[in-house]
Length: 231
Figure (tube, one colour):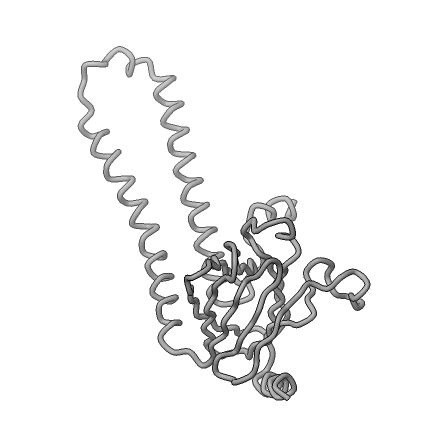
C-alpha cells in the first residue's frame, strides 16, 4: 500500500531545497483534495435539496460572496509558502564559491570549472561492457561531475546545438540548455553521494543516452580530484 501511494509522490529529497519542494507539493495536494471534497459535497447537497430547484428567482448574495472569498483564501494559503520558496532560492544565488559551466551536445555533456584553469572534460554514458559492479545501467558515465558539499555552486547551462535539459529529479533541478543562452542556477549540496539524472528534452535519436552523474564529496577530496584532473 505504501508503494502505491509513493508512486504519486515526489522522489526522495536529497537537499534542503528539494525537501521544501516536496513539502509544498504535498501541501498543495492536500489543499486541492479538500477543495475537491467541498465541491463534491456541494453538488450532492444541491442535487438532493428540492428547495433549490423551486426557488430559482432568489438571489444568493451570500453564496456569491462565499464563492469569491473561498478561492481568495485558498490562493493566500498557496502564496505564503510559494513566496517563501522563491525567497529562499533567491538567497542561494547571492554568494557562490564555485562556478561550473555545463554544455549539452548531441549526445553528451561537457563540464568546465571556470574558477579552476584547465579543468574541463566531456561526460559520455558508459556502455554495458564498461560497467563495474553496482553501477546503474544507462545512467553511469565515464567522467562524473564532482562538486564539494556545503559549498554554494553556480551552474551555467547552455547548449552547443539543439535544446537539452540538465535535470536531476532527486535534487529538484531542471534547467533547459539552449544554444546562445546561458541559464544559471545556484545550489548547495548538504548530502554526500552520487546523484543521477537525464536529459529531459527530446533532443534527437540518442536522447535517452546522455545521462547526468553528479558526485558530491568532501572539500578535501574535491581538491585532490581537481589536482589529478589538471595534471
